Image 1: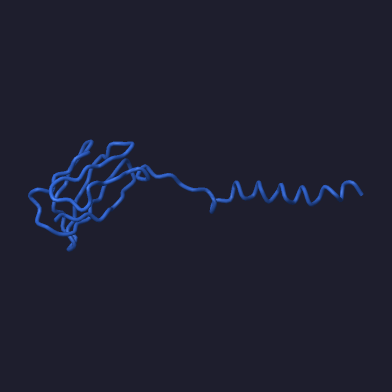
Image 2: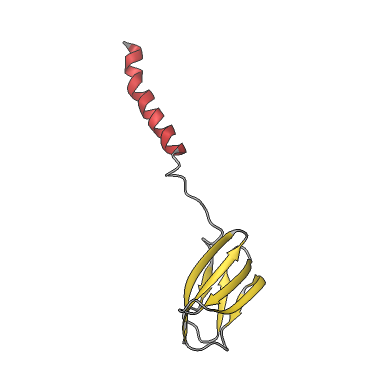
Length: 105
């Protein structure tokens, strides 16, 4: 009889261990989680604040054309020569890429 009373406890413990190893529950961390672009919108310069330096970036207009690129530890991006409008900045760190919408006014 005493062994039967342990069954609910064992079942509960099994459920907890299954939740811990469930691949759907494991959250992947990205190097881009801490990246902040500011000020956005901007009139001249975008600053990139993050834990890691980005390897490269590309800025696209809304037609998908590359209007600016940069490499090696970019932290400040000048938009002074670009026309007013909306753009996408695509940043790369290692094998990961992130695209963010920015506005120049």
